[in-house]
Image (cartoon, rainbow, N blue to C red; front, side, top):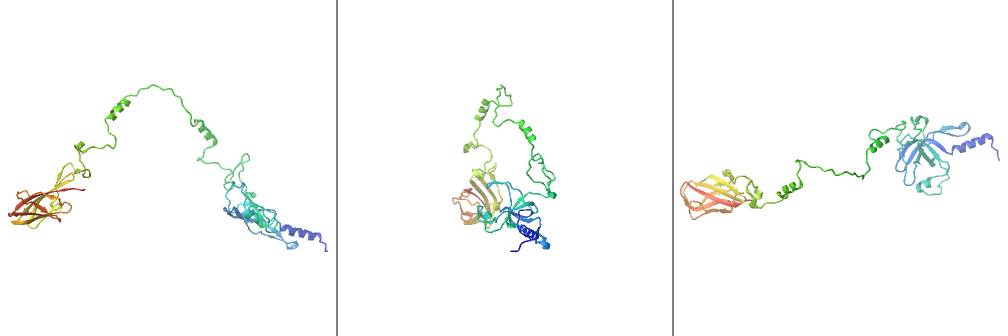
Length: 334
């Protein structure tokens, strides 16, 4: 068996130790808040090789590194993790893959020891360059460092402890009571007594009360309520709005009157030439066609007749330029 020289032993130790990892500073490359794992770039190079063949090499980015947040199974303290945050990497004695996937005590799936893939990250270790500018020596602090600015003061959206104590000093407990002696006093004539109010209410009706038709003695009643909608009961429209004269006839006047739901049309028609038998006088326009025509006023037994199309006829013997008055009645609305 060939014996090893002291130099050979030293090179062998260096080779063995160069593949073992215990703790290293690192820089966050990316962070996954869903799995709370990060990609970490080791911040120091490692020596590789032996003898004159040694060199400093940059270690690769380590993926899926569990990040430490203090807490328990159901609670935790967390903070934002950003690219460039400094951390401390420590490396497990064995392969952590089986534990990381199941959370239980498991057999390692490989023979790795102190290997780069088996790292844990502790965010918050700071290099001298990134040390807090202000550090509270006599109080605990938790919050945003403001990029190295240390503890911060709340703005005017918040009250200090002393301000709250001052405000509470002027308040009473919820549910407190007061005891007052009843003072006898008299209201002046700006107020009504109970009996005066009762007397005044006795002469009033309840809101929403209704009146019988016989109670209405004045005012204007709308058509929807069975009235005319006007203070008068008669108005005259233009002749063309009421009726159109038949051939050889002239409508001298046309009056249209309404009483509640009852309407009357009064037509005065002149026949220019003498006629005998059935004589066409005029046509009442649609929308104003009556249900009933009164007899012509000149005294014949023969009355007037209205057809479905609104044509008004009489059966009579007329002299030239005879004027006939026709009265028609019908209901307005439903």
